Length: 103
Image (cartoon, rainbow, N blue to C red; front, side, top):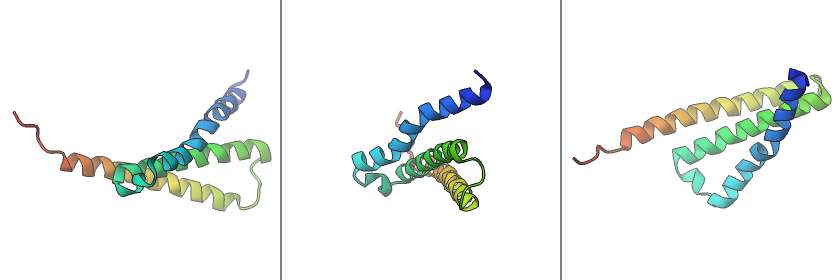
């Protein structure tokens, strides 16, 4: 098995879980994810990862020349960037609000 084939197999293994996670998270949390920075960050970054995996599979299936490729690619990368910044914000804002333990 070549490295390229192994990469596609690994992406195929990851795709169902990565794609289903944002839907399951939204369903199970019933909108609570939207109420705090960590929930929003998890949803955005998970959606970005799912989209990246999915467009990687589209690339394997259709090649690198499909309709709206640039729009799709830039949108996915924008979601990933937004998720990364949201995660950092959630971490920093949580750490600022954590009180010192009583001794």
